[in-house]
Structure formats: C-alpha cells, structure tokens
Image (tube, rainbow, N blue to C red):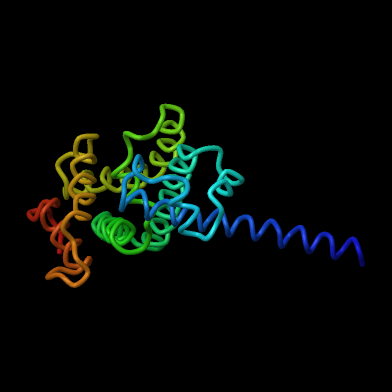
Length: 206
C-alpha cells in the first residue's frame, strides 16, 4: 500500500509540474506578445502565475529557453489543429480552404503562443532557431503538399517557396488588423483568400 501511495504521489507531482510549466508557457507567450521578449522579465512571468521570481528556472534553463518552448508549443498546437482541420477533407481546394481557416484561428483566436513566432523570431539564438525550424518545417510541409496538388489541378500557377512565403506573410499580417467584433469573420477572410489566390478559370472549380 505504501508503494502504491508513493507512486500515486509521484504521478500527481509530475502532473503538477507539467501544469505549472504549461501555465508559464501561456503567461510568457502573452507577455512576449504584449511587451516584447526583451522588455519581459522572468519576474514578470513569475508574477503572472503567482510564482516566486526564481521558480521558473525549475522548469526552464533561461528566458531564451522559455522563448523557444513558447514557439514550439505554439507550432505543435497549430500542427494538431491543422491535422484535425483537414482530416477526411478531399480535394485540393477544400483542403486549402481548411488550412487557411485553421491557420487564421490559431493566430487570431485560439493560442497566445503562435503569434510569438511572428514577433520574436529574431530574438532566438541560432541553436534555438534550429529547433523551432524543425517543427515549423513539419507545419509548412502540409501546406506545400496542398499547394502542389493545387498546381496539378490547375488552380494555382506556382507552388514554390516564394509563393508559400507570400501566403504566410499575408495570413500572418492579419494579426495587425483583424478585430473579433470587426466587419469580417475568419470564415469571410478565408473565403476572400481562396478567391484571391486560386485561378477562377480552372475547370471544375466552384
């Protein structure tokens, strides 16, 4: 019985540590967006979750390590949402529309972590950037596959790197002007994007 209680306590302790780490990531992500990475202190982040100023270092080696973790967490959440959005969706255009809506919801509604990637990329060290890029490449690979299918279907003229960068540049800039109570919903923006980027003369396109 004593062994069982010890194992239960150990599992509870691990879960608590995981929860505290997740709280720190969410708080750091929010503060990095609001104040910027350089202006945000570890004390700011600790205060946001009710910790002592030195406690975050139990979970992270440094503020740089925290920034990297925030970005990776945001990308992994985006990957999960992306996979759910296109599951069972057939057709290149339908999948493209689903990816756009998923991406916009991630950066505009669902997560504070992902926008940090947009604002604080230059603050990463080379080593941290390499780790983030590995996850970022997985996220963009799904888009690249869909863009390639769009070209095959005659719905898009080019699926090269510049095209992909232009797409993400346009979508990511919506964080600067989108308002939840504004004129356009996320679905409205996604539909406008589909109409803007895809070739209207393609045979069979709705």
